[in-house]
Length: 220
Image (cartoon, rainbow, N blue to C red; front, top):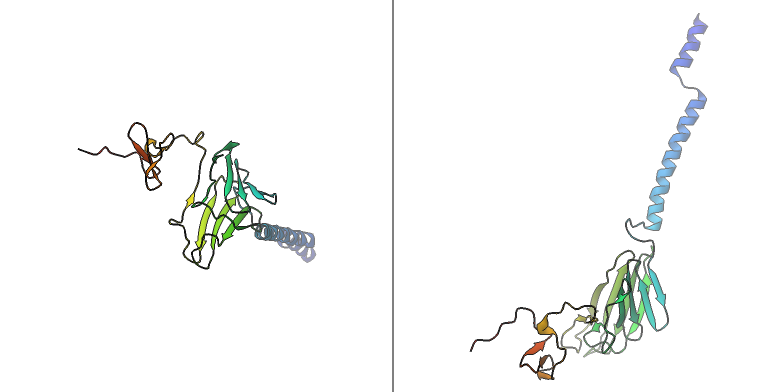
């Protein structure tokens, strides 16, 4: 009888060595899977919602960035100008005159680029001393992330530049970007009448890039 009771106690109260090993192995597998997920995320910098990599083509004279979200733009490596900016295949940059740049352009610049360790972000730097009134340099940055149709920009200068206003000017394609305030549309002007930014027209009106839609007629 004691032997029977002992056997029943072993069967009902204690798992077999096989069950113990199986339970331990199952826990180890779960732990290992969790470790693989954590380590993999840290090594590959997974960015949920973004493409794995950004397209960058260095042609020697230009850098072409394709974000994979319909935005493709081109930077001139000799001066840092943006000479092309296409969204869904449509060119947004003007094809005549000056391109998009700081003020009237650096003239010359050292242009480099690099991508993040994940390959999802590209940073283009254009550094120049050509427009500095004193010794020093100015650097303009173009930054884009895969999966976005944005260009993030920043400008850093070590001393005062010689340009009157330190700003980036995007010069757009007027055939595509047509929603321009009429009072700032200088097309068909007869020449400037005040400084170099206010232009006269044959109907007696003036236009300027400084004018908005809320221009009022003067009272006489």
